[in-house]
Amino acid sequence: MKVFPTLQIENGLTVPFFGEAPTETAPMEMVEQLLDLGCTHVTFIDRDAASGRGNNRDLILKLTQRFVRGAGKACIQVGGGIRSSDQAQMYLDHGVTWILVNAIIQRSPLMTEQLVARFQTRLTATLAAYRGQFQEPGRNTNLETTLEQAAQYIKDLGIRRALYIDLPGPGVIEPDWQSARRITEITRIPLLMSGTVATEEHVRQASAIPGVHGVLLDAWTVTGNPRLLPHSTEPCA
Image (tube, rainbow, N blue to C red; front, top):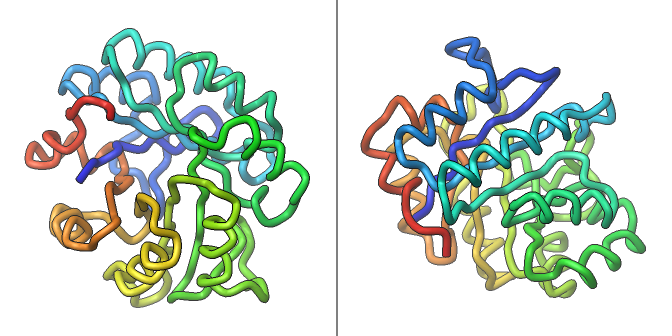
């Protein structure tokens, strides 16, 4: 079970998946902390690019370059607003291992075909859901597409890796493991989880689900729990 310490970047700052940040840690400072702890896995999410409110690409490239220099054979994921082959190639050229693509999968079939044709083995398709109902990332309204249909679409495209974002809501404190199982049963590809997955116990529970290969946790969670570090310091396979 791999744990990816995750830095979500908004207006040049690191922000948590949900709620308030425990500290105001600059992204580069957080990267230095992860490197000092021996982490070889990391995820950078450009929240501004994902929402269409500018981007943090230059900063993420600097963070990526520093992580590559410090971690050696690093496993780096980048996502958020990657809507062209050129953007994907830019990140890969700078040492990124996996490109996370989400809304573009549903919104633009032509762009999806181009991304899959060029980067099939380097793409991770993102599925977001709330209480088992598929949602297009960044929107509050459900699409007519079901979670099962979205999973089948990813399988049909030939994408070889997926990320399930389990969106929290009022009173929702435990991850939706049932939906994770449904996705893995349909796609038969390695699945990562994020969103409501937030504790060491959640990591243990995720590891018990066949097909779930890793989780994304806020970087603060990983740096604050030594027991999670072994999952973030394995060689990048």
